[in-house]
Length: 171
Length: 337
Image 1: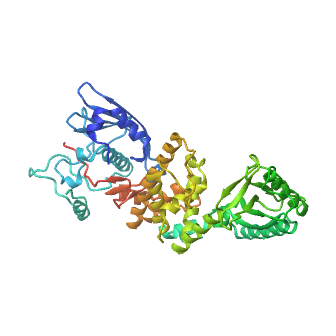
Image 2: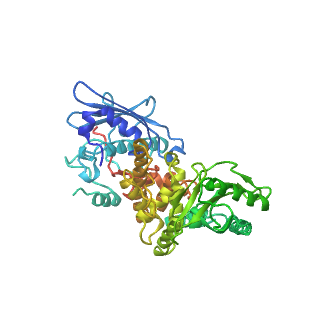
Image 3: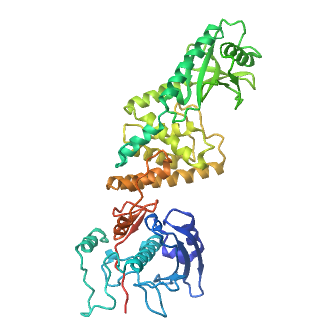
């Protein structure tokens, strides 16, 4: 059972303590939490890379995760001076572009999934950004920037991801 | 180098690694016979038998001590069952052993109430000699000496050995191996080191009732412990509550350790079922220690591919299976403009 976003909003310090002291999310080396006057929760999370990436010299990542009172989320990489990002909105918003809004729900984190899957998604994204910096390649299928010219959704290009839609279908 | 490519093979290698050194086992059995000859020959003992985890074959390596029950001779000039008899029994054992083994040392590293510790210079382990009186009614219980309180206390080592043997038979010889693994688990958990290793044997006895794989047996035992550690933990004979002296704080810590371990063991079992053997064995190693074979570190490319969709294990390995601790949903990154 994941830590719900409602609980994060109610008590971000406890949510941070959960991330820091449990084995719920691999690689959390530090986490703090606080509330804002507008009812949002802000988590500052430090993440160690998975061992396979740590051995390749991947850096620790620091990210600010903002959970707004309506459960919309934003993730901002911290300490990124001079590090380019492929999937991050341009200044002034600069949040990570974690997922494609128009994708099938099977491919998206939704607030009901809770905190741990959210942090996992952010961690995965930061690992992919580092891979892209090193190779120029995004390691999985991503969606083209901008909206589809037809007004619909960007189609899925690979058979592998189409299979994943079935495997991860939400009932 | 043993084949450890599957979880089952890794457990087999682990089992092998926990076995006592056959030369030490043989030396222990040989010295047991020599000490028996010495004590019976001197008239102090009527008979002896081995007790403890060495006797029950539930002791993982290394062999540290061998427990012997010394059934005192009822025809000895000392009346054991009178005041001063328990203390005299210890002295009689010491005198007899010293006569045949002049280099032996006594109570060198511990002075137990119930056992005379004997250190032989040619052996890397000790013997604990427990003076005892046979049950006058012919039962399998014995009365063991307490040299501090100078009294005799009922004990049931034969019953314990019998029920463990029976469970080992009913599990087709797997039970004692799985108890050794549970003891290895305890040894690898600093928070459990103040817990008697007999507790792990008792947990195994309560949870492992039939023949099953080592992994399934350990999951069953850890589940049982997580669910029951707040209550009584009876020894396998059902007589003693081994948890009677635990404080609430100790129980709380033990519960945390077993709950987390049970969770990880289920994760490992699920990964094994999905064919993710490296991930499964990696988790088992975090639970069971260095004697459990380690898989090769995950390669960069494999981890990257698995992050396309699957899960991340508690050991930090990305897998395409969804049985790891953290689900990794295969989303598409995107930017609005």
